[in-house]
Structures are given as structure tokens and as C-alpha cells.
Image 1 (cartoon, rainbow, N blue to C red):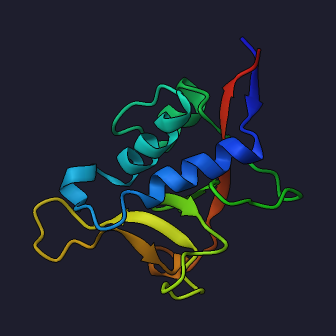
Image 2: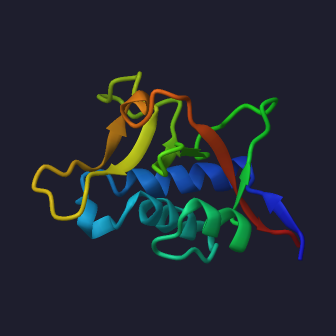
Length: 140
């Protein structure tokens, strides 16, 4: 089976879907990977509810790691070494701090202070820069 990167339009649709979850609680969305999968499903890609990086890349072939020469684009997935993930959004909506390029489900199950889906600084999750991944679909 052959795969291709999502188009710019498909990537934009993923990000629009992700933005629709802003304000939803962490436990309602699932872990950060569940949030990523829910948004990716909007372009008819089957994605497990709580897929981790290995599941999404090796087992499912849903994401491809970008090379160092490739620039991320809106809707790509930011992945942190501590297993956190979310969407890269170079132009957050009006009213959001423009330094906040990460749209993610933030919190821990059972905690009262969960942020849920919101924007944040990538450095909040890991001082090391994230790597980027692009959604893939079956070619054809």
C-alpha cells in the first residue's frame, strides 16, 4: 500500500477540526494523542482514540517524521520527547498570544486544574525543541 502526505487543504482541515475542540476538557478529549487522532479523523483517516507515537507512525503509518530540511506547516503534529503531542499552528486565532504555536490537550486525568484543549508554548512541555510529523493518507 502506498501513502502520500496530506495536501495543504487536508492539513488546513485537520487544524480547523482541532481548533473546534478548544475549551473541551482533557478527560472529554482523551490524552493528547487522542486529541490529535480525533482531529486527523476529519479527513477520513482511521486513527485509534489513544494512539501513541509508535502506533501512529510504525503500526498505522498515519504520520511521517519530517526531515531537518523540511519546514513544518499548519496542521503538522509537534511531538516532544516526553511523549506529549499537539498541532503546530503558526498563526493562532485572534486573541491568542501569537507566541503560542502549540494547540494541544493539556492536563492529567483526574486533576481539577486541567486546561483541556488550548494553546501554549512548546517550551512548557520540554526545553528541547519538538520534532514534527505530517499526516499521511493512502495514495490513490
